[in-house]
Image 1 (cartoon, rainbow, N blue to C red):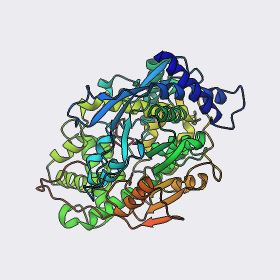
Image 2 (image 1 turned 180 degrees about the vertical axis):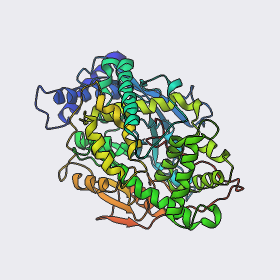
Image 3 (image 1 turned 45 degrees about the horizontal axis):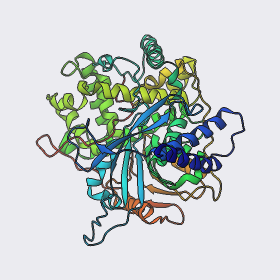
Image 4 (image 1 turned 90 degrees about the vertical axis):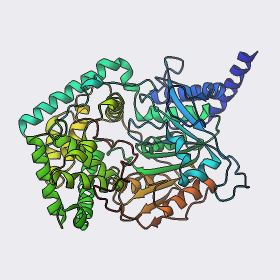
Length: 545
């Protein structure tokens, strides 16, 4: 009887879901088959739900966090074929009003979050409700995190032995020689072969469109008729795909630090734009260090700070610090300062200490964490697979060489590191997709909120403007003259006010709005024991090279 009831419920839901399936797919096309497959999978997931229980394999978790899994098809064109399980986490709504302990806050449903990547793991997201800035949202929503397909516990991808992943110390020439380029081409070819060998024919199904479809199955498994979602960085891209594919399934969506969704930008041109933007953000950091020359002694101008940085890089090329920190590890550590300005005091202090003869802070901050090698290798594999699968890439290295040689003349800091990160896509062995045209018309989609920092390097501001043009009814809120990547729930109270008003009350400004920048970080000295590394997602580029 129970099985019959489940199948009956699933059948009824399937008919309703199919009637609301994405429009625009011609019958008989792969897109139509995948649309039907998503509806089948969502109906099945709603009937099954998620059996949340203790997070048995996660240590030191507060008792309020629960874990479970949801099954999704590997291939949505074959929804009854091979299934993979996505790891899901939850902290139930507290109902506690942080401003009035006697007031019980009504539950508004589930808030699903993705931290970006590709390859970022959102499984620990629900714990953010313990932070004061998230308590109002934690009162009203079940906070839902999950590991996207390929990540962590969710049918994890791997492209090489994690023991070989960290190749330190290593070089990071801003203007590589022809012989160095040949070495990196060979590495990229080997990496692409490793991805194909380790995953086989399933590799093609790790892509952004399937991440969007997985999100709809997760919505159904949570038994939500419409999705409330917040995505940061890459999470904005497949969130935008979701809004395009399933506009009637959206309740509220927040896009925080936006990937440019234009078909022409995915992904090769987006990476060129990113490299250019990092040069400006690198200048912001150096100017901040120069303003605090009394603390760090690295020079009173950005040029003087740059001179010291290059001098340290040359020293590390001659003699790696601790035998493991070379120029590439130095560049990777300072790339984090381009993502998050709360790293600025740490990195400046480490550079200052090295110049004055103490290498320990730099070794601690830039040295590879070998115990995290498996996690880093997995994240890198997912990043590569998704971006390579999503779109066509130039297959002739001469195109990469031409474009990036030209760019490196004005933006040397990140340009070639970005090339080596993405070059396996030139030699990818799985089929490439054509990116979806992200776009919704008037009345198709509930109003959505876009958050962007004006000087964000990882996702340059033009991406937020482009998504705002493409999603009818969206509202853009800008943090002026700031560049931290991922601003929702951060230090800017103005930004958080817009976020809370939207997610808690559905309120948006009538048109674009702006906030003043959050305060710059304060410098810290070597004997300031309060300093510690901020808790952030590892930025792209940290893993390989």
